[in-house]
Image (cartoon, rainbow, N blue to C red):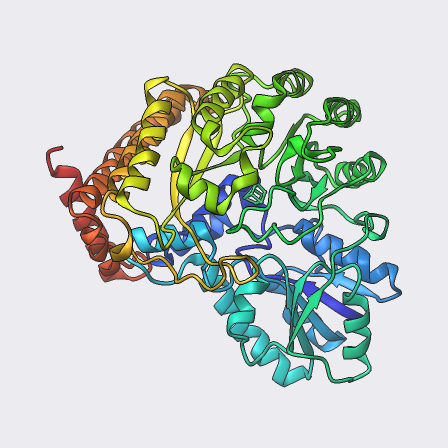
Amino acid sequence: MYYDVVLSSDRGSFTDYGGSSVLGYVACMPYRLVPRVFMDKFFTPKVPTDSEGKALYAPYALRKIEAILSNSGFSVAVVPPENIRKFANRTKIIGITAHDPYGLNPVSAKLSFIFGGGPTWTAEFFSEFGQMLKKLKTENHVKIIAGGPGAWELSLNVPDWIDTVFVGEAEADLPRIIKGMLENNDIPKIVHGKNAKLDSIPTIKNPARLGEVQITRGCPRGCKFCSITPETFRSIPIEDVKKEVEINMKGGWKRVEFITDDVMLYGSSKLRTNHDAIVKLFTEVMNMGVDGIWFPHISAPAVRESPKTVKAISEIVHYDVDRAAAPVVGLETGSTRIFEKYMTAKAFPWTPKDWKDIILDSTAIMNNYYIYPCYTMTIGYPEETEEDVEQSIDLVQSIIDHKLTAWIFPLPVIPISTTYIAKNAYPKPEKLPKNYWDLLYLSWHYDLQITRELIPILTNGIKNSIARRIVKMMIDKVFSSIDNIFLELKNTKGEVSKNFSQININNTIGVIKAIYWLIRIAAKPM
Ligand code: SF4
């Protein structure tokens, strides 16, 4: 069968991450350090396909594009990367979503610079995919358009095999661009899509991986470093959310993963939590017979503003010690000066000066209801001094002193090209305030301690007691090594990160070097 457009993405995006989106972060590691076989088997496995080779479930972004284009009258197939060759001579356009094509997103940038640099798996997968598409383009004369959350990276340096990079939302402008490409019109190398009106956002037509369903778009808090900032905030009507849940359930997904930048924003106006809308959303979706609902982000000020909403969510979804949620939450900084300059509305309805209390109170509230936050911090602003980092250390130390359950990840702030700080320089390890490495060690040491405490709960699901003991022992050994890595980074103010660039686990010498290196740091007394 012929298709106007075939949609796909690289292996790092076109996967269900072995059933847990958290494992997707492994693809942000330098590819030297994670063997290919682990990626293929555990972290980025292939998705199942039908007899023609189309995906039975796909990343939500591709399902949304599929719906937008098919509603505009185009025939569309969504195909995993390993099958794209079969479809290349049956289409005129291949559309791809790029998640992190050059490994520049904040998590990739951090893991790469801590572990000695080099391409991440996200970049490696994109590069492999690009080489294949370049060949298929020459052989089949197809046109290639790329969009998605990583389109801003591509716009910095558009590969020669991509005809057009589409930055922004697709609903208003993508059908017009696709029509132009099919009619061989001249299309600019980079196109910016306008934000979609709420009533023009279609529901997906086929199942998304992991039961993904979008409930909000955009975020009104307006942090200057965030790519979400320029968007207009919208909540998706509950009827549309339920339609998509139903489609995913028909595809076999019993769990639901809400896509949102802050679950507490659902149905809100002027940043005030809409308790009733959130309770209705969670109740009605659970009543559809799903096993559980998970969400990627929640904001600390909203938690503190409406603890009763957090309690209600937890009770409706039956979160518990062994069924806890672990969303990513922006902690950003302990410095009031940096906070006021870059994220002044983030603390609303309180002020930047209240930030420490907001974080401590909201973490305690979340913990009460089995929500364990993964806090991300942004460090490395041009004017950030050791005094600012000292205040961040003080905030992290307070979380530790209060024995709160939270993971804390200090990340370098990345000047994403669609943000207000696009012109800032990329942070380099040697340019960061010297005590950044103290903050990094303090945070990771606590992260490992928290994870160790939760291991009995996390490993309870493993039925075989011998396997459970082995897993616990392995985690313990690996954690000791990781802890030593961060201690060395602290003691050498980041210098030791250069040693990691010697390691490439994907070749034989790399394996030997890696084993030698791990033994060396594991054997070193603390
Ligand atoms: S609160 Fe989060 S999602 Fe919203 S603008 Fe700030 S960083 Fe972006």
